[in-house]
Amino acid sequence: MQEFITELASSQSLLSVTSLTILSMVVSAVVLTVLAAVLALVGVYAERKVSAHMQNRLGPMYVGWHGVVQTFADAIKLLLKEDIVPALADKKLHLLAPVIVFAATLAAFAVLPFGKNIIISNLNVGVLYVIAISSFVVVGIILAGWASNNKWSLLGAMRSAAQIVSFEVPATLAVLVVIMTVGSMNLGEIVTAQVGGIHKWLLWRFFPFNFIAFLIYFVASLAEVNRAPFDIPEAESEIVAGFHTEYSGMKWAMFFLAEYANMFLVAVIGATLFLGGWASPFGNFMSSGPFQVFWIFLKAAALIFVQIWLRWTLPRVRVDQLMYTCWKVLLPFAFVAIVGVGIYMVL
Image (tube, rainbow, N blue to C red; front, side):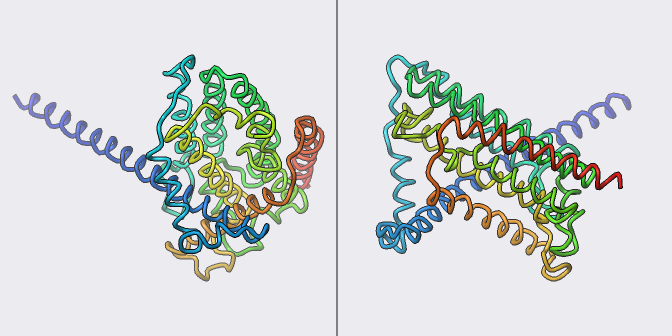
């Protein structure tokens, strides 16, 4: 009887632990989804305001209250818009594609350190996890182009897949420079190695090789999130809108949310790897918990501003120029950075 009671108590404790684990996972997923939606709204508003100031556009400056109402109106429009699926499309895969793209983006958020103790999952291989899980976006994009049964969608999907897969190589090599410098793939430990002020940032370590790695990572990240001048997969003058041509309503909005969430994702990773992450640039000044969130968001916002700035400044490159930049410019310099850091460490 005593053994039965012991087994029953252990099973109940195990059940409670499982329930708490599932509950924490659900809460984390909801928080990340809300965060991605809010970031998309703020990103759209910022994109419009920056373009309005740079190109003297009147609409985003005056519609609603400084353009704010227009962004919310667009969000409501997407929620109410009819979901149209082509008659010859594969309806199941057509629905699954944006879900995969959005889910892969949200999953990468799980290891981002927004503060010393503000992280959902502090993995020892956090860098490797981000690189691996973000690759699922390519699967969703190819699926969207294939399932739409549209030649323009398929062409846009193949362009996007070739672009993302190609630029993942120099981006990963740039990240490898940071891993060599710190000796860890844990994002939290990488930030901890930069605590103490702006002079501690990995951007300046082993100069100029880490600085070159940062430039390579930033350029490659532009291509990976389909930002200008590397927005060839969405070249409306050539292939209508690329892989999401046959999408409308909320399914199109999921691609849209994923794009702006990815902008924030690569910006946070760049800030974490090279710009001190949540660490204050002034040493111990303004380095407590709330300020840690402030610093990581400020650094990410600065990188996002540069992404938007480049979009409204540079023309779109051709496909051959895109691949030339990847394989004949970024890749050789990435190897130079790796060899340079290796020599620094040996000496």
